[in-house]
Amino acid sequence: MTHKNIKQLEIELWEAADELRANSKLTAGEYKDPLLGLVLLRFAQNRYEEAKTHLENTLPINPRTGKRRELTKDDFAASGAIMLPDNAKYEYLASLPESEDIAEAVNSAMKMIEDDYRDLAGILPRNYQELMPDDDQEANLLRNLIRIFNRDSVRKAKGDIFGRVYEYFLMKLSMMGAGAQEGGEFFTPPSLVQLIVNFIQPDHGIIHDPACGSGGMFVQSAHFVKNHENKNVNEAITVFGTEYKSNTTRLAKMNLAIHGIDGKIANNNSFYSDPHELFGKCDFVMANPPFNVDKVDAKNKFLAEDKRLPFGAPLTGKGTIGNANYLWIQYFHSYLNPTGRAGFVMASSATDAGNADKRVREELVKTGDVDCIVSVSNNFFYTRSLPCHLWFFDKGKSQTNKDKVLMIDARNVYRKVSTTINDFDEDQLAGLTAIMAMYRGEKPEVKADNAWFNEHFPDGKYRDIEGLCKIVDRSEIAEQDYSLTPGRYVGVNINIDMDFDYQSRMKEIHSELDTLNVEANNLMAQIQGFKS
Image 1 (cartoon, rainbow, N blue to C red):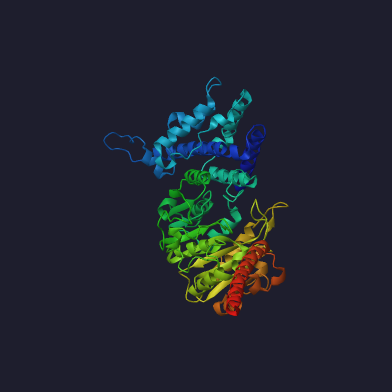
Image 2: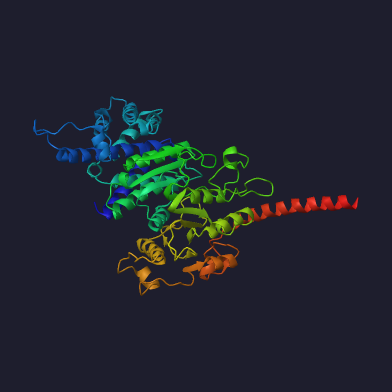
């Protein structure tokens, strides 16, 4: 299938499935799990059939019998497929007589797969009876949904097409706020994930996401390995994720299964645990953590002794953590091994945050590991319009760049998808990636007809461009009071800086003011005591 054909398939399947959802009694959140479960089941059979054909043609023939041995679960696992029992195959469900209980049959299929594959235990949806609570109309809904994914074009789909469909459905459900973590944040927009992947190039070793949502960072890393290294994904990388919301953890495990990625996803809270014990061990860290969390317990024993906080917890004057952004930022840095790289999404307010946050940021800059900061415009996320920044660390930075940071202001670099959604187009992604490559002294990989790149870098070599990019050294950052806002350096007026999160900064200012007021009152009380 061509890229155009795949996009058309995604759209057709979503429109058909969403039309059925519109006729059901379920909300998008209630519909999400069974819908994605059917996508996984359909994909599992396609992978099974593809692997079966390949294995039957490649397994060695026994010279004594002249026959190939029987296929095993391990054979299918090595091919990134699940060995399906007959009654768990999609065609079996699609051809089930009207007299049979279709919901029970699908639930049973999911249970059989979970029984055979321990990593999927308790993960697959088994609530299909909820699609048919009252009448025959709902029963027909489930049957029609199964038929959608049994169309001829779908049954013939091979390779990673269904992984693409799953990602597309996750995106659409996120846009609808379908039971999502923080209203859709379980899904990081592909544009931002792709830029992070392009910048840090996660092609080997341990990859960790301590706020992994539905696992999109791992999926894009697998795509990168396949497209650039021509390696077996599960031999090249090992992925570890942590996700606080149990339902989103299930989405992540399904996402890995549907893409044939081996990985460990822990259902846990990264603020108070390090379930994979990866301190200092990661080749790559990637994340889109929840921003501006304000209820982290500073007195928690694990947090108080956490070696992932080498610069200390960012405590307010009241001994609390007013904002967890600099907990996350320290975690990402501390997980890296001596040559590790990190790329993550962060609230715009973090680049200029004051008090304890500023102290931590100063220490981070002094390590020399801050590699690049990218300002991103509004409307890249499906459920919030605020801008953000992408941060990049590199502990294996070249000596040439050890004292430098690449600042990119990409707020004017976007494609308008709709009135409320922006993303990067292919040329823009390649162009931004090329800036990072040139900063590292590497040859940029861009097509000759990339108009965006040719406009900004006509001779194919890096140059500072006012309003877009500048390489700055640590002394210049110190002069700017350790601000990491690209607009301060590339020539954009900070007074009208669109990428600054004024709402969050105002909360910080109020918090700072409260602290100063408490100190002022204490001083006044002491003065009054002296006078008396």
